[in-house]
Image: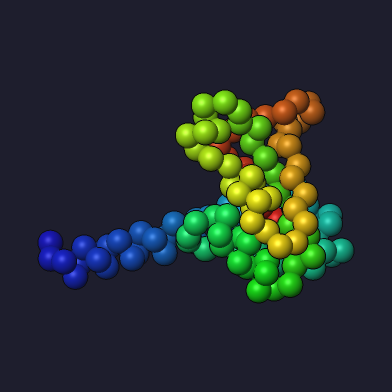
Length: 120
């Protein structure tokens, strides 16, 4: 395999991953906020990059009034090692940020690595 074909495979993989994440976001929105969509001025965005930087820059460019995002509820070593996108957005955003703890269907705080879809 040459350099050009390796690059093409990588580009194709990235396109497929972005499409998969767009579908996952759509499913999440359909399941969780379909009844609110009509009342929200919302834009779905799936991009590659440093999440907190992308969110803050996008919100600033669009003149967003409020960023609403969930938190995983990590603490201690996992938080130090993994960092917190929400915390970085809170520290760097020029607009208010509403951080909502992620809870399971019984109302308990949940600490997971999936389902953290920021809504801007």
